[in-house]
Length: 324
Image 1 (cartoon, rainbow, N blue to C red):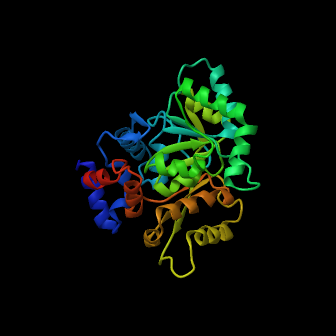
Image 2 (cartoon, rainbow, N blue to C red; image 1 turned 30 degrees about the horizontal axis):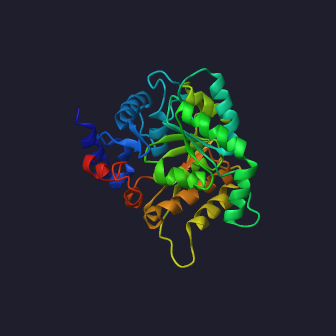
Image 3 (cartoon, one colour; image 1 turned 60 degrees about the vertical axis):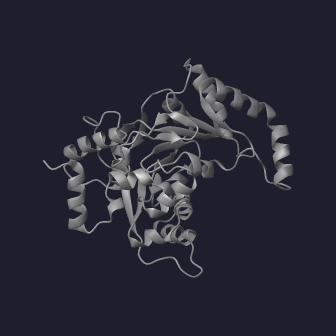
């Protein structure tokens, strides 16, 4: 049988598909850290590809981008029942993110597990308890005063159990994740409904409850109902007064507030290239408004540029081109 990379190349030529659109996140082989803050935690594209190959042979059909990422994180790809909208998948997410309001109970539950350290890279982001009333500086001081006990608990618990802590004033959780932790092919769960923001960087990022986050932090497989897939083909390009937000507003007008329920929305087509990485993140972020499990864009030069600008060339940036 021809090597996997050769098969991908032949498929691309036969279908006229752009290079980055066909399993580009699977081609990297370098040992790359997940983030600047976790130098000893590495991206495992090799395991992702191995699992995908197992599932592809079982299903005997091509897989969409979201399926590759989701099924690539199966706990048992060889025997897991896979039926869109029906079976429950047991998955191994790459990381967990929590905002300060939901992290309190999650950390208390994790502490009760008796474990000495979280099983996967995890972070806490203090942004939700800051109320906008007067102005940035005054509101931040007020939040620190009112929530001092909460912040102290989260900071010390995080330090003890290996959870990254972003203090109040560091920024919004979703932007911090996009700038530091998201990368193409990641499976990330976050205790906030707008976690799908990370789909703008080619990852499957899903909002969950605190109990789900605790399961993953404790090393227990996470259960997700096998998502359906909704494809959205973008043609043309943004121009004039149009913005990325107009794209998701149009999609929301078609699908309504519950049309995306139980499904992952996959954007594709030539129109993708006219949208910036942060613009794609905005579209994915608002996928929550149509009830979607999450949304995702395919890896392209916009994402590569964003990774480079945020100092993460190794996170599927230049390495992606070398190995694909």
